Amino acid sequence: MNTEYIHEFVVLAETKNFWEASERLFMNQSTLSKHIKSLESELGVPLFTRTTRRVELTNYGRAYLPYARTISDSEYEGLTAINRLQNIENGLLTLGTIPSMPQYQVTLLLAQFQSKYPNTTVRVTEDDPINLQKYLENKSCEIIFTRETKSDFENNFLNNSQIKRIPYLKDRLVVLLPKKHPLASKTEVTLQNFKDENFCLIKEGSLMYEIGLDACRRAGFIPNIIFTSHRIDSILDMVTNQDCVALLMDKHLEKPTNAPTTIHDDAPWTYIPVVPETNSQMSICYNNTEPLSKTAQLFVDFCTAKLFGE
Image (cartoon, helix red, strand yellow):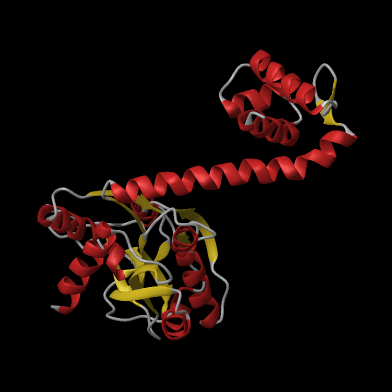
């Protein structure tokens, strides 16, 4: 039995439309129809009832669907495992990291590593810490640079033995505001001062969004959020031109190493640390339940020596 046909059956069962299923599968409708008919012929039962616009599962199709999904998922997982092993054997390191790599010096660290080990290859994925954790769990990434709140880090560091954490750096919550703002000259501020302001935050569903929202709640108010984005430059633009404020970490706004000397010079915005102090912890994390690949182990050893002089 052709497992590709089984996967196509699952997609058609989900979409109930030959055109939509064929678009998702990157094939034409007539080929998809032939494959489904071939599968039905092999099984000896009709899987769908067809109309001019939609298809519906028959009782046979509904009975077969959960098993077809299991077959399709198992094949995908098996192929993923093989590809992962091939990548490891070929010296590929799959690395996940939060955005703003230059500000957190991840880019520089990777460059130094590959300068020392020129035969290694690193494939990098940027994403939010919430998703990075999933990548580590499903082995899409072998190592991640991720962010945790201070309390989560301390709890996980002590209690989660499956994930090895190498502390990388800390950062601190700041208010980003226009230089013309009345509080722009302060050295520290409380969030209560901004309860009537319009806010920009990193996109909803991200850890930074939750950190900012929680800080405002602890200060006794719910912020009026008028803009969210995963792009720091868009948030800078909003603060500059829309007379609003943003909550970011100080590292988001630091000048990257080796950046042009003019970057951030004469910027129309500034940032001020928030009190009480709110921190997050950046860590280099990997799964501690199985051996690392050769390249991943080289990278861990390299980072450990860089950070701790070992």
